[in-house]
Length: 425
Ligand code: SF4
Image 1 (tube, helix red, strand yellow):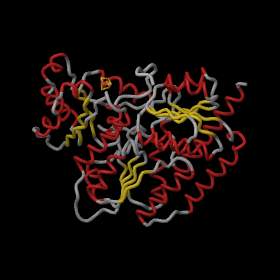
Image 2 (cartoon, helix red, strand yellow):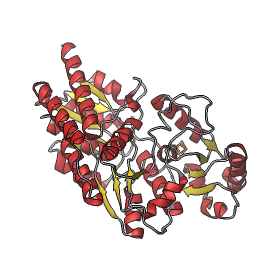
Image 3 (cartoon, protein in one colour):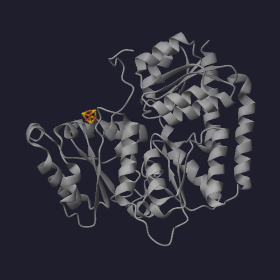
Image 4 (tube, helix red, strand yellow):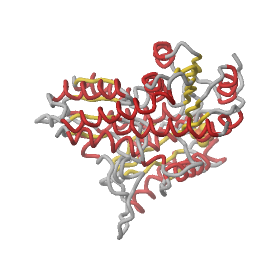
């Protein structure tokens, strides 16, 4: 195995933490690091979501790198509170602040923050990836904010992971149709797909409120849709408050069925006819295109849980997942991938390795983010854009792959990509 990265596939931890905080209402991510650690992620968010995002930074320079960043951090928190009056500040560490060893938990505990909550989030980017950063952020939010109280709220906590606003909307619509009360943690469905309604509010509408995060301790259960991005928070909630917990990524027929079964088990709800209709429509869409999809050799590059669920879905479509790949190295991913493919598994590898595998495995169709576009072109494969970031086409964040309705959208995307590829001759 190579010990050098040639074409990097993973993104840094703080980006995952910012992703989680953008789904909390009136929250400000405060990056404790150098300016570049906030500037490049903001650009990536702008390009993927087409939304302005605001990230504060403690602007560590040479002095702070040598003598410590306490002064910068204290000043930054004061500035953010004075200018934005946020409900929550998530202090996100970086390679630099973790390396110099700033005790951000200690520094934060010394302050008085009026009505704002300040939560330390550790995201040293020399380990893990954006997925780890999201997971760490969500765990930090529930660990620092959740509070047991009486009576229990009978809600369900849903931890969607690093998915698109469209995915969160699909999940919400399914739960609404079952009359279930729930808390989405964190909820980017409006904050990163915001309507323009004047006057413009100081923070985007929507998102999980701090009160909802506090109250998530009193829910009857928790379901993490992406085990690697939210699973730690689910384990914490289960361990600390004894609530039921499950992990299911509802992409495809079987996985969506399993998700709804888990929801029914935890809440006693029943599946309404509208969801049966949605399931039937997805199966109809799959049957309609099976002659196009059957036998196609697919390479999937995505975050671990999404990659596994996509591999299962393409198998439902009669395709063969010959490569299942994720940039986030994980033993769990490796283990589970063995059960969804007999092909090649790339665990924590770069895009150079992915391209080599695509070439060797005679792939017909590639799934991946914008960084995979050149690979699909070079290797003459059909291409389905998925994951983060996608910025060479517009609108991807608006639609979800999750749920039955998302499955229909995904089936159409896959089939149209195959048709276009076939027309190329
Ligand atoms: S220095 Fe570390 S935290 Fe900052 S942008 Fe680079 S990888 Fe991310």
